[in-house]
Image (cartoon, rainbow, N blue to C red; front, side, top):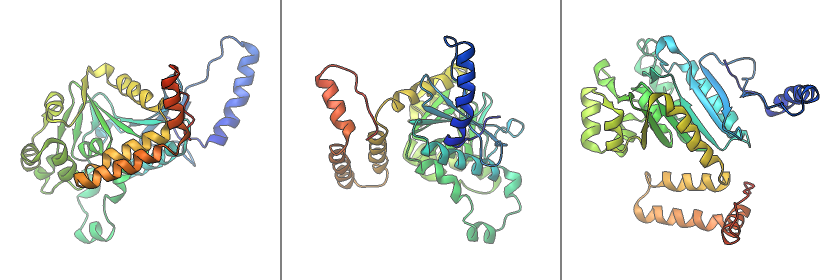
Length: 300
């Protein structure tokens, strides 16, 4: 299982291995797969790696196969820790969250919830820490295969882009358990697919297929099951190849459309657009275009 490493520790471990390998076979050495370690040991419920030709894509894989990746409190805490580390990693320009071919995440861990009281939930602000994905500055892509139900659907909707495998299923079945979505399901689903379909899904607990989700605007693309993760990583690599600073501005501008009126949103966009002219990367991008060469962004 992968885990998160502090950059200094990673360098101290990799450099000696690299030197030894290079001395033995200078022409054949390749960097090892980038894996991460959490402070104090390995993660229990997730696997985290860096992928892509330039190792600039962080991949978080949910790893509770026996529970169909049910989102227990410990898993969410581990994912938040991983997101914090990837946010601070200057090499990483985008993040992919995925599960298994059978389940992205089949929901929240009901066994953890069943004995909670109103007082527990209200005083402890239950599920508040689940929102970390939606506040991450770097773009996050959900690569959804299999079940994305309840909290799993909500987790996918917290991401900036959703890619789905052709057998994926999305749903908010909380009504069948005598409750309602509690991590953004009623809000994000309605904004994504409209009131009528959102109402139908939330009030009946019925699921929609990947193809239906694409038609409704919930997901942007659908791929064969075995191609999904590679396609998500490919998209993340394209994003990571742009200026990380300007990408964050673009993400902020698009997200503002969900919170502001059109006039307010346009004003926000103009402010961020003008701000790009204070960056080295805006100057480099336009200069490269005029000179007919590829831009060399430095994230400044």
